[in-house]
Amino acid sequence: MREIYLDNNATTKVDERVFEEMRPYFCELYGNPSSMHFFGGQVQKKVDEARARVASLLGALPDEIVFTACGTESDNAAIRSALEVFPERRHVITSRVEHPAVLTQCRNLSKRGYRVTELNVDGNGQLDLAELERLVDEDTAIVSLMYANNETGVIFPIEEAAKIVKKKGALFHTDAVQAVGKIPLNMAESAIDMLSLSGHKLHAPKGVGVLFVRRGTPFRPMLVGGHQERGRRAGTENTASIIAMGKACQLAEQYMADEAGRVREMRDRLERELTALIPNTRINGGGTERLPNTLSIAMEFVEGEGILLLLSEKGICASSGSACTSGSLEPSHVLRAMGVPFTCAHGSIRFSLSRFTTDDDINAVITELPPIISRLRAMSPFGREFLNK
Image (spheres, rainbow, N blue to C red):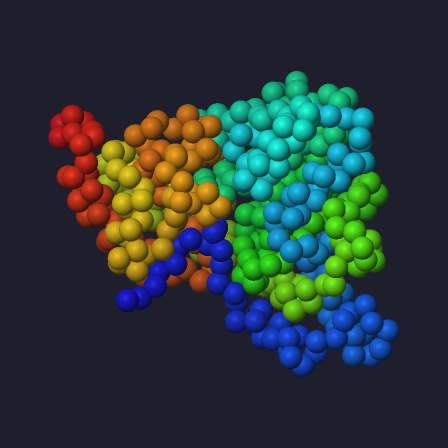
């Protein structure tokens, strides 16, 4: 059975060029980059090259790049740092649709006495910047808002939000793991203080991430006990994965136009064909700007788990939401925050494409999904009064 992988917001295939770049640093060039001898020094040069490549993709300076173990670590480090930098401030702002990496951290803080505000979103999953401006105050230590939503692909007006926050004297962090490599970012012209990204979302391996920390931003490390990363993240560097991350960022920069063009066209065709062939559907976040690779489509009166299982039997890999909340039978917290009706939220499926997606992959979904929905609706006790009209 041919594998049709359309779950790239969960994780991506490691690009073979990325693997070839990192491969020598397991068994051949295994030196510690902190060592004084030549064997470690040659590894340090490749780590420096990787840092420069990440910085280039972000429009940042190399010394603003801190390598971490994953996007979740980067998110946690940013928020914890802000609270240590401003111990007198006890207010944190985020949104109701964040990834659990941020949302769980913030909800844990509320149990420790911090005042945590979760911003609302509208029916398209968009922020109300007036609400943000009204709520950020002199007690706010940090505002953390995702750049683009992992379930719907909705892009927040992050630059406008960052400017509002900076005017009030708080720090601004964004979880950009879904945005980096898909849309252009330029930290040189940005008001963002800290930004998180993850290697496995852009064709590098799992286990490596980055926290961008703007030069001059006060920062306290979450991990201590070593001088690595200029004292901002202790621990011997995961050199092979860092080198892979650098190569992945170099390739992402080269393929940015492909994401905006060919990938977007495939996503749009998939959306257009499915909504034409399957009645009673809606596009979650369809009325606002979205990532070019993401389609969240709700099909009324069916269960997402049933759709995914039947798609999987056809070799098609998709998702009902965040991989970090899969296994839960509760409807997505993102769709609930958007006010998506119960009958749609349960039947929402996310297709997320990559530069490795082909037209044949899209054709397969267009062929296989409509009869699956018809079959499930025929068995469902819900919605017969609407579907049989």
